[in-house]
Length: 84
Image (cartoon, helix red, strand yellow):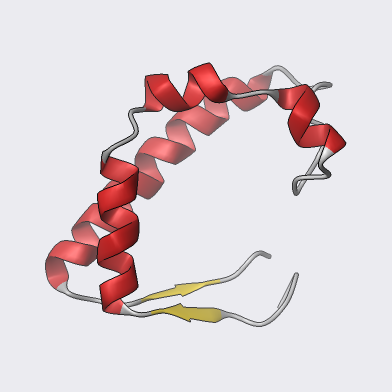
């Protein structure tokens, strides 16, 4: 499946991730967004400097991820994670 096998994120780790994500607003994340550094470090999927739409997508996807982890933690559930 894509870039490695699926991984199980246990409920206690989901709670830790949810807590960490809740402490960082989308605005704070965007202030830290450095496309040149991400390209230099070969962060998947790459091409951050070439495509300005990343900022809009990053904000949207971060908020969705933060909400997903908050809801999943509230349910006491695990997460299966993979990169496709």
